[in-house]
Image (tube, rainbow, N blue to C red):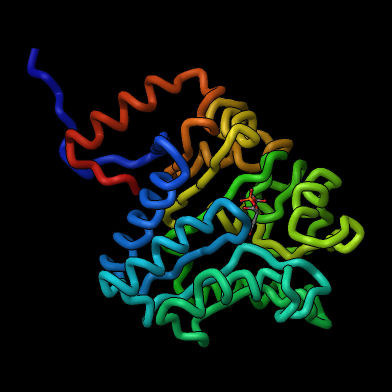
Length: 275
Ligand code: F6R
C-alpha cells in the first residue's frame, strides 16, 4: 500500500506545541504572530494582557527593533478591560498594553482598540466594540492567556459559549489571582468588559498560551476535557485553527502528552508551520 503523506500546509485544527521553558514558549508565540504580520501587513490582531504574554511582547519588540517587524498597518483589539479604571491607572489594561508593547513598536494609535471601562453607556460600548471588529474585517489572529478556572478573556465559568462583548462579574478566584498586581485585594475591580466566547471563536486563527505548573489542570481541561461552558477554554476544541503553546510544566497533566510531541515533530518534518 502506498504510504500517505499529507501535502505541506494542507490541514489545520488544533496544534499542541510543548516548549522546553517560558523563553522558548515566548519565542514560538512571537514567531507565529510575526509570520502573520509579515504575510498580511494589515493584520487584525486580538491581544491579551496578564503575565503569560509578557515574554511574547518582549520578543515582538526585539523583532521590531532588530528585524524591522512592521506594525504600522496592524490593527489591534484587546480582549478586555476592568470596569471603573481610568486608562492611566497603573493596573488598567490600557496602561499595561502601552507600557509593555504599544509604546515600543510602531503601532498607529488610531488602530489600537481596548474596551473603555469608564464608558457611561456600557451596553453601547459593548455593541460598538463588536461593530468595530466587524468594520475592521474580523480578527485574523487572537492571542489568549488561560485562567485557572478556564476563562479566556474574562469569560468566567458558565459564560454562554455564544456570548458577545459584555460586562462580566469576576469570580472570587480570578479576583484573588489578579490581586498580585494590586496593593490590596479590595482594590481589584469585580467587573470587567470582555469580548464574548462567540466573539473570540470568530477569529480566523487562535493562539493560546499557558505556562507553569499552576496552569497544568486548566491546560488538561482545555485540550482533553469535555466541551463545556463550565470551562470556557474547552470550546477551542471546536475551532478550526488553534495553536496551544505551553511549557513543560503546564503540559505535565496531559494524558496524550507524548503523542502531541510526536505529532509536532512530524508536522515540522512535513514543513507545516504552526498556525
Ligand atoms: C487578559 C485575559 C485573561 C488572562 C488570564 C491569564 O487580557 O483576558 O484571560 O489571559 O487571566 O492570566 P495570566 O497570563 O496572568 O496567568
